[in-house]
Length: 107
Image 1 (cartoon, rainbow, N blue to C red):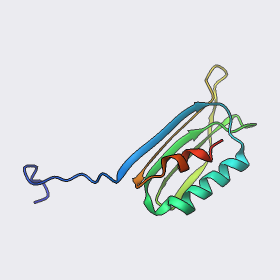
Image 2 (cartoon, helix red, strand yellow):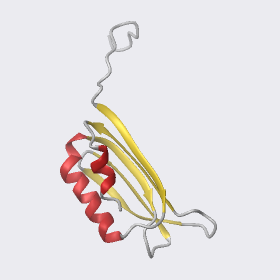
Image 3 (tube, rainbow, N blue to C red):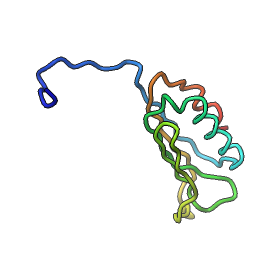
Image 4 (cartoon, one colour):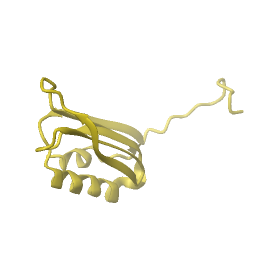
C-alpha cells in the first residue's frame, strides 16, 4: 500500500544530482548555447534543474528552472548588491547524468 512504510523499498542508483558554485560572470551568448545544448542532449533524463547566474554586463540576476525539456529562465527584477559576491549557482537532478557534460559548457 502507498503509506505502508514497512514494505520493500528500493532506490534507483541511476538517479543523482550535480551542482556547481563559482564566482564570476557568464557570457550571455555562451549561456544560451549551454542551456540549449543541455536541454537537447539530456532533457529526457533531467528531472529538475534550477540556478541563479551572474551575466557579464547585467546588473540583474538570471534565474532559471526546468523539468525535463521544459525550461523557464530570464533576468529578474533583483539586482546584484554593491557588496554582494557575483556568483553562479545551479543544480541538476536526473537519471544517468553526464556530470562533466553538464559542467563543461558553462565556461
